[in-house]
Length: 194
Image 1: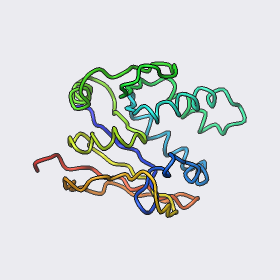
Image 2 (image 1 turned 30 degrees about the vertical axis):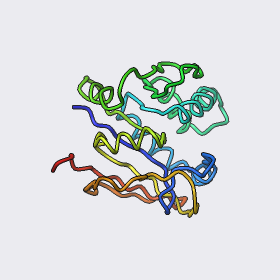
Image 3 (image 1 turned 180 degrees about the horizontal axis):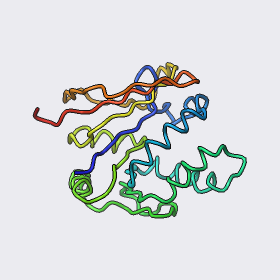
């Protein structure tokens, strides 16, 4: 069965974004070594799950970056993967910007993701998408969490873990520190009911 990997940039105080979805704090800590790590992780996947807000932002950003020759080589490689992979978008709005290989999810989040997990293929990755992520956490559908912890305290914003309604036991798989102070914490989530 395919794995669902939540790959999330997060502040020290558990925020994925600022109160107005600001991400400037995470771009400030982007470096070549971090770009290479993100690219290695994405290369193990072939499907990206996105909520509407994250999808709209990425659909405007990545197609342009793949053509920007002033962009670092590692970032261009990442942009090409983002643009070519299958993207499943969870949104009740049908008026979304066009992006190569993007498909609007039909049906319940749990059913759609379970069906994807049973299909052949590589890992399924989730970037940002706080509402979608909350649903995936609630249903116990995330197999691994890769948290890219940034050395900043935001004080407010969109929290990664929004509810304490369910305990998620995790096993640490790997840690890594990057030149800009970002630390990667990679956890395997124990299946629900264990």
